[in-house]
Length: 490
Image (cartoon, rainbow, N blue to C red; front, top):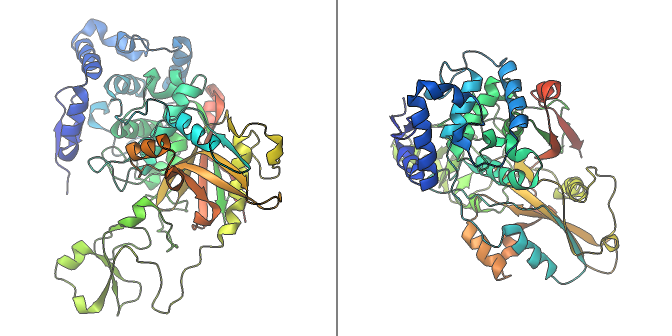
């Protein structure tokens, strides 16, 4: 059934009815309205039409950027139009346009994402809290980053991947040399989710991660499909950023990148994931990633799960049960305490969480400057309790959810160097930014929102995405179109 849509009166983009009011309200911001009005005038004037083909136009006046670098990058875009033709799902306003013109048009029409701004700076507050802790601890954290939370009116339940891309982008724009000029056409801001979806479709058109694009039917704009690490890497690489992927898993992982499925899991093809032990997190209170509804194929199941007592591995969601097609006598109702346990009582084993220590070792060495799992400096070697790393935050993916790692802490629980534990410092899109800021300002309760120990990692596979410094051009940019990964097996 086709989704009903309407055109935005400002930029004329077609959007689903559910999104049009929110989209138009964003235009009412004075800065955005001024920029779109200028763009409309240029569209109406044939003499100015050519000015849209360069990012150095008056539309972007006042932005801090290097025009020569972006012009060089734009030439790479124009000369690398080798993506798959006839792809589905490309937004209507860009149909038939040359990719270079599509980029210019999107640069002018994209909308800045709203977020709760923490005036003191999120990472500054976190640093103060870490410095105030007792005991022998050492922490390495990334520089500036803004927290983007999922909201019920926009993306709750499906947009965590996009929110993590926004968080990572907020860091890149302010901390990574050259990124501000390259990302999102030199706009200097983090776009909203629909704009990011358009940028990803352009990346697919240009040939970045064709395998991943095919797994999502080359369609992402206006959809609530889940994305994962591969989409994050493909999007950033399309701007010339050197994004890389690292796999951690209990089973053998191919060194060639396996594309993410619609739920963001690292798998071959479009297969569903196997049941897994649940972790304790905000989304787990109302979303169930263990099973798929066998009535309407909804995944994840929201609310109650109904498990058949007569048919093996048969589950329904509340909506299907309410249709009256199924007998309530056949099903057992589970609430948020549901776990993937069969009637035989044997629970799925996702592997011992201790195995994930290799991931913690890699993250520690990454933030202190060495991406490996073979070296680990002693805590005494660090004179400062908290150091600011030059590395980017990490896009942190597992089956069903993604978060952003902004640092890591090591602490000694006793006098022995062998009695140490590592703790990830994580930002979760499911958390409310205002609540996080309040906890950090008061130095109370922030630990349960940010800290994640090795015992909390209960999934069999995890995936990280990080960005190396520098901008890729020419042949290197072409090579970035094929995604691969570094793999660690345990």
